[in-house]
Structure formats: C-alpha cells, structure tokens
Image (tube, rainbow, N blue to C red; front, side):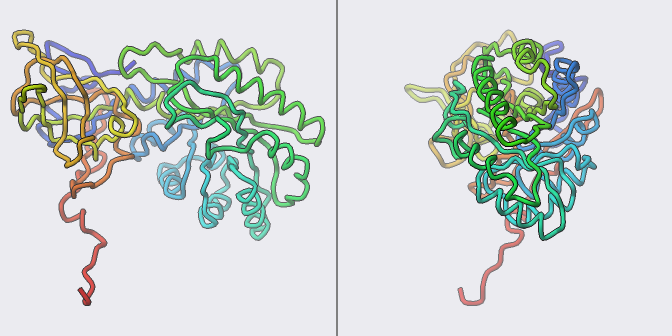
Length: 419
C-alpha cells in the first residue's frame, strides 16, 4: 500500500527516518515516497498488460514536477485540466501523444497551446467547447482529435463532492445530447471524433458502478458507430479507483481488471486510464509539530503547526486521515485528541476524536495518505506560507519545492499611490 513504516519505534519513509527530514527542513512539510508512486503505476500496468492501455496519470492529484517526472519515466502519460498543467507536462518532457486534456472550462488560449503542442485529444465537456476547438483548430490548419465525455447518469456511490457521473453534475454530456452531436459530426470540419470518455467519480470502492457505466457506454458506442459511420479508436475510462485512508477495503487494480476486462473482449479500441488518487494518495504524508496541548472539560486538543490551508480535505470533504506519531512510545498513556491547526476557523480540524499516545509540545506527527489533493489544494489563508515538499527515494531525499517565505506571500502585490 505504501512505504511509510515503523522501524524500532521510528516512522520511516522508505529508508529515511521521517523525524530526520522534519528536523532538517522544518514543519509543516509534505514528504513523498517515490517507490509508492511508481509501484501504483506498475500495478495498473500489470493488471491491464493484456490490452496495452495508455495510462495518463491525473496530475491534478499531485502536480509537483518531481512526482510527474517519476510517473512519466515509468512510461505513463498525463491527464491535464489546465494550461498550467500543460506547462508542467512540457517541463518534464511528457510526449504530446500521451497527454489528454480534460476540464469543463478550457480557455481559447489553453486550447490553442494544446493543439500546437500536439496532444492526443481533448476530453470535450460541452457543445460550445466543441465548437471553439473546431474554430481554433481550423484557424491553425490542424485536424484535432476529440473525445466526447459522456455522462451515463450512474451513481458512483461515493462522496457527493467527488461524484461526476450523475445527470445533475457539471461534467460531461448526457447521452441524448451526445447522440445529436455525433449525428452532425461532419459539420466540425477541423475535428476528428476518435474517442469516448467516461469518468463517474473518485474514491469508488467497488466495481459495480464502473460495470454499470461502461456497459451503458459500450451500447452507446455501438449505436453511434453504426448510425454515424464513426470509428472509435480510444475508450477513456477515466479514474476513480480508491485509495486506502483508514479501514476501507477497496478493490485492487487486479480485481478491477478482472471485473471490467470481459466487457471489452473483441473490441478494437485502445483503453485509456486516468488514475490520480490511486497512484498518489498513499505516497505522501503531511508532517506537523505539536505547539500546544489544550485540555477543556469536553475535549483534548493537540494544536499543531499544520492546518486546513495545508490540507483542506478534512474541512472540505470531512475526509478521514490517520495520524501517526513519528516516534511510537509504548510507555506513554493513551488520550483522545482532536488534532487541530492554528487557522482562525472552526473547521480547521485535521482529525477528530483520535485515540493516540499522549502528545506533548515538540512532538512530531504525520497526517497519513496526504499525497493526493494535499499540497495542490493548499492556500496561503491567514497569510500562512505554504509548506515545502520532499521526495524520498531509497536512502536519499531532496526538497523538491522550497517552503514559501513571508516575502513570497506578498510577491506581486502593490500599494497604489491613491491609498
């Protein structure tokens, strides 16, 4: 699952003691295990090796250059959702033919940049977007491949904030509207309708929602290929495989493959996957330091230097993250704590009602499973500089993003003469 383990009572990331990193770089700090990231890419590659899929890591989960370089070096491509992510993809040398571009609000500038770079295809979310891509592609004298993201109206049985395949979601095109688009595909003279995309949500624990959605989409493909003379070359199945945060028992990549591969037997298109959380969540931790222990008549609070601006998932999704002390001491008593940060919000709670060894000022703790949607969603709320990021590989580690400073907080700001 991951490579954060105790050795003689000390938490290690691969072969490096986490407390050594924390003492050197300071806290809060994100620490990533290179081995965990690449092994999760390999799990998907091995599970689906019979069909030679294109795996495009969903870099919105964790877009640090060192991380995306690591997965690209394993042969993976990238799923991007912005011009900024395309810029990062270029920086790490990702082949254009392994990049797919999703998102509901692509700008004209982002579209043009991606077309010029030669990405594999756009995952198109609406008719106006399709028309804009056609217009820009024609202006550039290009023939651009597109994939319609269809919305199969399937409940992914996950948190409503990360459900994307229901009819009321902002994502995708409903099947009736998609039929109408395919019926007039020849009107889009600068486009090639080469793929279908479906992504029903994130942190999906079982295969049933996937099977239901993919069965619907396959019937739709048969229909539009027959009626409209279109040949689908790629079926992009998106992401959604779950990571283990606590006591969940999600399907493995191998179990997922066993369930869904029979659906595609005899099909000629190439499968595309966009894993994000599955690859990165267990690959990272957020390390913080205890500032105070506050005891009240109803609660014990461990006040740490990490906060909701560093890791917003608990506040945003009521997400559960395990909390580990960096030094495990069996002689210490056990207490129930709310682990909270210093941000002036009642929602700044990283973990509620956790039964932990007694904590004292100066102790270090690790917020586990923080490699996905951690730093990428961090902010400078309360004028708090964002933490540093560290990558560990074996016995080596390096800061792969410097900690922000007070000066960087005001970079770009000015005070006009008229105030």
